[in-house]
Length: 300
Image (tube, rainbow, N blue to C red; front, side, top):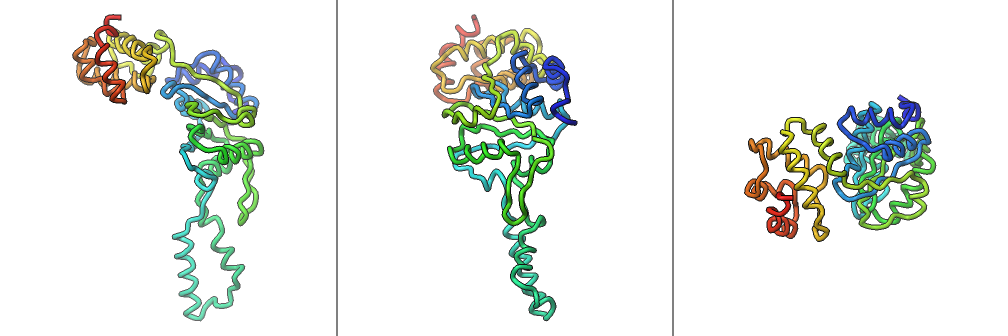
């Protein structure tokens, strides 16, 4: 499927995403559709847990394309993102050549021939970006780009501008069809303007109460409606505390509702909320703040 022609309108894409369980807004569906039509990367920024990564997964499912994920981290470099050589297998191959030469066969191999055997496709380890370029069309998720450093960002910008990479031993590899690229950022640092100019952009907020109820109903239909409403209201009350280290995201709402359902809970009370709070809140300081305010939050 050619991603650029997969859906005739943003509304069609929104329906397709909804069929995967991902409830998109008209604004997000529009910018995602435009990124497909224009073959431009989509940069998604927002708080952790707002559904940035899930969009890439839903797009891959809606487009019926493989998902290739590159998880960024501090210190990542081009080798980890692009390709590497399988050194253990290369060494084994060299030893096999030496053994053959020792037996008197093939001893006339020159150095160039040996090097050519070592650096061919058999020993190439394709990392996510090279894999995406070679196997396109795919959905390439570059997750948490804000964790990487400036040098990696510059390398990434070059790849996104040309859709090709050069491997000195093998030549230049160009994507036959540009991959669908989703970049996510939790905005722990500002990205460079050059990268942002290359991308379409969307800031993803935590959903409103009604929208989160709809997400919960779509993703966890086994949760009773009354319990779902109580969990969502409690989560929104927790998020309202701006002093929290890490407010719960949509994933935590889903996990909390499912955990309570697994326990057979039909109605959320202070005692049960306190006992299961570790499903929704993941920092000790946050847990202490929320514990002290649970009665007020549930009453609201």
